[in-house]
Image (cartoon, rainbow over all chains, first blue to last red; front, side):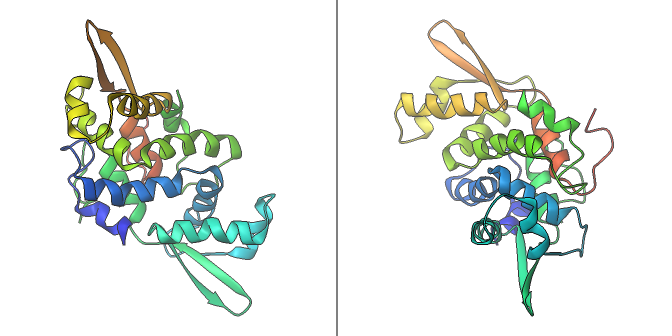
Length: 117
Length: 117
């Protein structure tokens, strides 16, 4: 997944990015580059590690149709940020472990130890 | 500037983002959500703190016209990520101090101490 590759990169400030790395990482940032998707991501991420959210809890927070919300969630999933599972009537979403910390490490200019493992 | 506001936010994983915060931050991620802009950002950021790059060094790295590169640089500037100054014939670009570390802190799930100052 693209998000997991972020851990392998030397960091945005370490050296000029190659074309392939830039293309992969741009997809992740593009997925976050929309207010609805950023709010969805925040609602899911704020459940903490191992936490998950039912789509039935996400949709009521927006003045948008269920298909529109599902489309935004699909883009976040395609970017390697979240994953989901259908259980009965509902789909449940969670943030892929470590993906946000790897992105943070990629952006950080200080490259804290222990985050890129 | 939007990028500077990132330091004030509780963090993507801390609590669901409000609409205004999400709109502001989405602009920053959208600016990074393009391979050319991400490479430009990396070329500028890899000069380190206080470093700057002449646009005359940026353009040759791409198969794109000078106006196209300038447009991408303008979007990065409007997002609060970089600033520039014309000196003589050329325009010089640098990353705004702290903006990448504030973005990293916003994404991090561990909220390292000392980054949000």
